Length: 260
Image 1 (tube, helix red, strand yellow):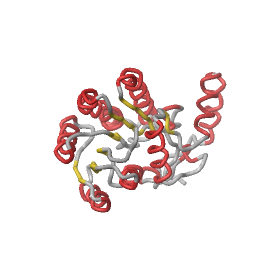
Image 2 (tube, rainbow, N blue to C red):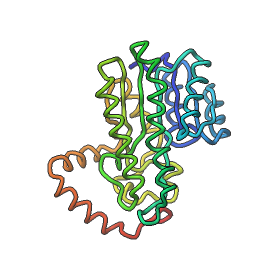
Image 3 (cartoon, rainbow, N blue to C red):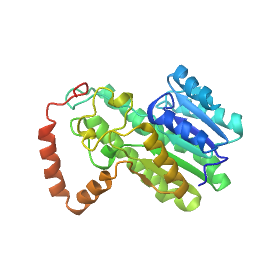
């Protein structure tokens, strides 16, 4: 899908990848960009810098997503590209994670994508064209050592994106899933742990790769080239891959957010 002239929504737009996406879509001459975040001041800063619209929303609440789409429809008559980018790291560990923590990370990292697709797809299917982009993580393709909640929810996000592509890809709906390793954002400000083994990239690099994927209708967006090699190894020999991850686990056994 050509980005020029398209009507775009980006969640998690106040900073990091979301802000970089808003700027990249604007640079690519999108018709409109709706900048969505719980942090309304941050969303306004992003929107003001590109002439977009700021909307406050908790993406884990279905009614908030419905309102975002209504605001976007009111602004420019519809949504061509919806980037479900907002996500959280959640509580690190496993035994430390309460049931309420699981519910929270599930709502933000998984249900937000489901809500967006459920409520924006009907207009896209009616037009016969639309694009859904969701931000997952390399952890969704591999795993996240030390963080059960993040690993499980990001894997679910990838699975849902695949389901969307399989189900609606032949009906004019493009789908891409962003799966980077460490990106320099608020989430990695306290350290990236194992996610940083192949280096930290800037949000603008991830955003540029997303726009390239949308233009070429490429499903998997992996700004870290190493990720595809790891996925290949995992698919070719799961037991060997798990053994390697167990060795990596030993290196990061005591790591927690806040450590260098």
